Amino acid sequence: MTDADIHPPDGEESRIALDHVTIENPDAPDECAMFPRDASEDEMQTAWISAYDDSFVNLETMR
View (spheres, rainbow, N blue to C red):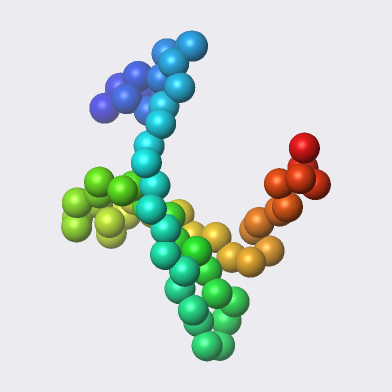
């Protein structure tokens, strides 16, 4: 793997289509898991991001 595999050249924007699922936890905050739409089963084990309710902000507030 090279740096170009991770960081696109200047002027190029990397776009990865993501899917998400909400995981409802009875004894903890719910979480949103985001993962590449075309991920294989093996990639699904490591290629995901988890976010909790306090990880999100109102878009209009941040503009």
